[in-house]
Image (tube, rainbow, N blue to C red):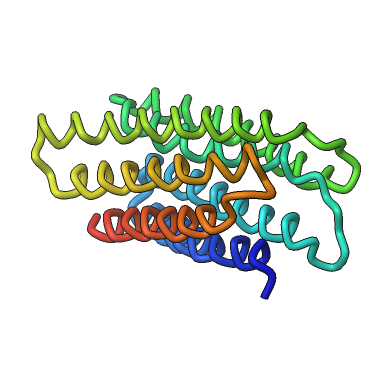
Length: 210
């Protein structure tokens, strides 16, 4: 098996984990009517779809040469950002406002997916590195936020979520060399994919506790 194809396949479990979190969040939202759960569900669903879009683009499934970078950037940024922001809201009005912004962002994300066959490439390795750096900043902020919540509240949920974001931060950090030098560090990208999958499955454990 081609090692680049193997690196692409190993990212698939992360998408499955995100999809399971999304489905459970929407299921509990339907039962409870808590808008915050819909934000989590849409955020994780966005990340899951981002992973699957990346799999399709990187494997050139069906002979496609889609420009997936635009959708992947918006999807990975927005998914993580709204999870982080959901931990900051303190009132029902703030939740509703955040939800409106998330829906708007999701619409943009879907439009970019639809336009993948005609969009130009986003850029080279340097642009990919910048995109990953922004993603790492967002996940790092989420890690620090849940770490502070654990210090103040000592809840098992905040501890597990904070740990999950720390693992994800490590995974995306290990992915950076391959992004900057696509012909190299493929084995490192495979390792980073396993680590990211472990991070998302840890998130799934945390959200299954609620």
